[in-house]
Image (cartoon, rainbow, N blue to C red; front, side, top):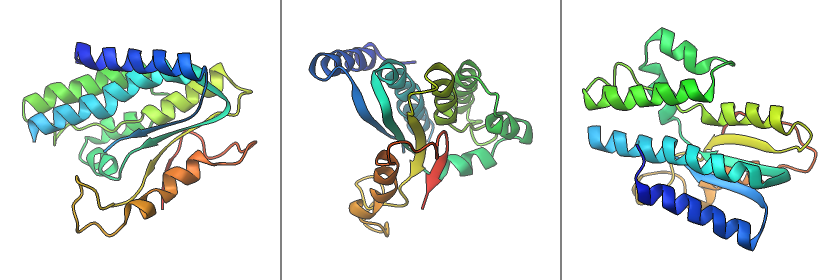
Length: 190
């Protein structure tokens, strides 16, 4: 799925952060027809998963992780079968199961069936649940958010929000006060 260069970039970035800082206080990931969908899935899901796998152990107690996503994922989920929707919304879905579903999504997209059998990234919920089990006293909060429709190169000039306005929700999550316990493993939007 991933190119050697992508994996190399993640590992080099990890080594540099470890060398310079030893810990991470905040980790923010930006999430956003066939080739575009496949490339986006590889970037937004698989590469983010790779990065989280390497960087989550470096997040210090009280740290925050913010995955920037969008409402597109909810619309995609609504195009899935009821059984698949239920699986993605399940509190007990595992990361391995999610990876298999995302691999299936890529395979179905290559066959032109992605609209019938699409997938939603629930990685934030799963990673938050794992953090709660593995580091229960660390107070790390991991969430996903939608900044809204923001004027960017991708969204264009017709988007109603400025970049500053789009930053409000991710910054809110990044600056949750010490001792906060919620939100955690949630999708937050304005």
